[in-house]
Amino acid sequence: MKLKSLFVLFILLLLMPQTLLAQEKVAPFTLNGKLVPQVVARVNGVALDSKFLQREFFAFRFQSKQMGKEIKPEEEHSIARELLKSVVARELIVQKAKSLDITITDNKVDLQLKNIEDQFPSHKSFITALAFQHLNIASLKEKIHRTLLEDELMRREIAPKVKVSDEAIQKYYDDNKARFTKPVMYRVSHIHTTTISPAGKPEDKANQDKAEHLTKMINAEAKEKINSILKKVQAGEDFANLARHFSEDEASKETGGVLGELHPGSTLPEISEAMTKLKEGKTSGVIKSKFGYHILKLDEIIPSKLIPFSETKTDIMNVLLKMETQKLFTAYVEDLGNQAKIEVLL
Image (cartoon, rainbow, N blue to C red; front, side, top):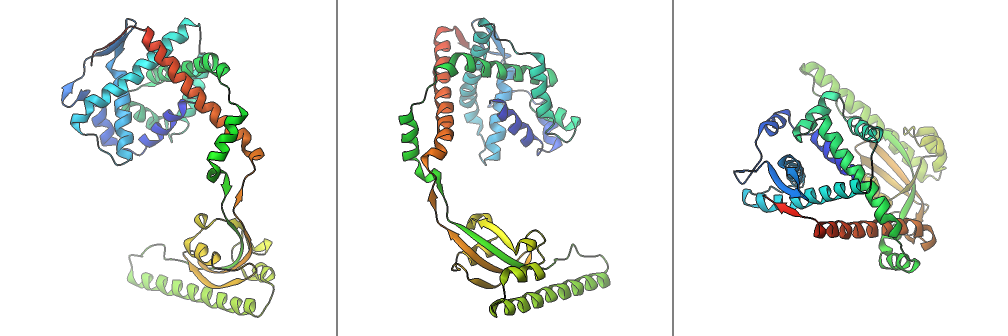
């Protein structure tokens, strides 16, 4: 649903400094130093205010910055012309929806508005983010209304025509088997003793010395404890039983230290490196991580596995339906544009 992009941008706006918000709010809309006209296009005689283009341009510039790309002044006009195409397309969609008597209730708009505002810590921060996009409550409602009209037009005019064959689904599966392959997983257990780091340096040197001494003492005890446990492991004592009695990981000790099935990229680097070197049923030496000391036991290596087509068919069908719907809708809007009278004034 198109409303998702609204959520993403509004959440990103929470990160912006308040001074920048104020500057953006009062700055006139210019492209490469030239003031943008009040009306930037007409669609079947309906004037499109520059504020719509300004919002699109700001969103594009903001997201470009997030990806580390700065828009050069000489690029602004050509980018704005491209963005204007989407503004015109939305107006075409609204006009077509109205011609088909598609209506969106106020309740639906208000629900989406509430969903967006609920992502913010306060009403004030929400209003600030709106101002940053040159929006207020009324104009945001208008934006939501247009988006819901587009969704409903797509549902009525395009969705019934979209079909995906079994052959297409099978081909997508065959061409993208890497996406449907489960990686190698490692079923691992561990025994853990906790170390600590100083919370911060006290202002008083005497207290600082005490804190450092206490930290060293606790960490030395943790190391001594894990080494004594390692000797028991190496002597052949039951690993699960040792974990239940001595491990300080409350989340796993009751199950004998079971951490579950881990992927090398989903756990601590030290754990990942050690577990991938172990053979099934074997245990490691003492491993140091930022959380303390660990002894690992590799219970099982679960080989990489291709997920059967039968288990992925529905998901693939939904992906292809979405892709085909968007493709047909793009062509539908292009056709609306070919039949419309469009004047670009930028």
